[in-house]
Image 1 (cartoon, rainbow, N blue to C red):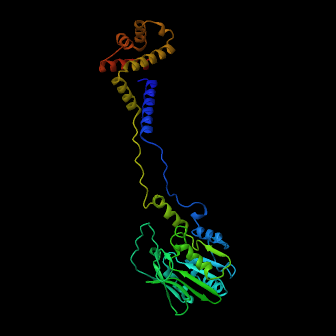
Image 2 (cartoon, rainbow, N blue to C red):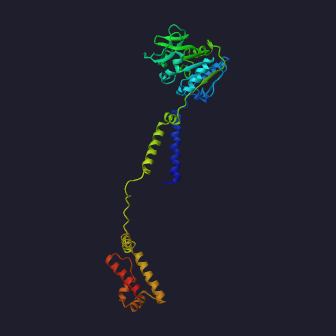
Length: 375
């Protein structure tokens, strides 16, 4: 089939396929959740900060907080996720002093908050893990529940812990359900500590659920005359490896396997190296014999004969000028006189054409070579 015809057939098939596609399918719009964008992708309190500013409260977010190096003014409020970096003595001591001097510290648990028991001891509080049945969502999908005795609707499915007093009488205000305290406020020196049992209430994804935004406003500005509100959205950063593992586990696994394979390949071997066996060398005669046999089997024997005759006559012309211009019969007689060989055998060798007998072909080629050697 000609290329032009084939191209036209392919173009026709593509046209028919495109016509069928656009006849049976149509473009439609589809809404799809693509996640947060901008600062909200890494700042979990971006919505909370925006809420504060909309209500006329000065607010700012920053990635981390090192209390031993910097703390805001004591009339400010710090909204701080609990982190292991706060457990060092110098960091804890700096935070205690700041709260005692008049600061307002809002602590939010992320992860397993029981490890922060020692940090909470001076405030007379501790975390306790709570077992409870999961609340079913309402008809509209709302997962918030009314907290008994208080006018708040909160998502209790993410409140895995409750607060308990280690010293009675220290807690001055609290929100409590049947399992314990959800939010507690206690004075400390000239300042105040507010602590919640579920830090995720104030995240970007949960702030607009139930009364979470109202609870945040009440904590920060409802009962405490605060200055500027500082949101610390990550008191502890994950290591680079942890972030890579969380987002690209298969790529990290493949990379580790390749590293292990590379290390094994470069490790020193034990014992002398095993050398490769030397390649077998064949004689030139064997290669010549194989080449001649191949030409004979593929019908190219006449080429070998022509080459042998041309080589003979070339050498004869050099040593006996003018012999190449003679007829084959005269060439045979002249060569026989020079070499002492039979003229008839030389003539048959010079006239070698379309030989199909291997024995005769070999004999003629031998005659040509002997004649050439005796010149």
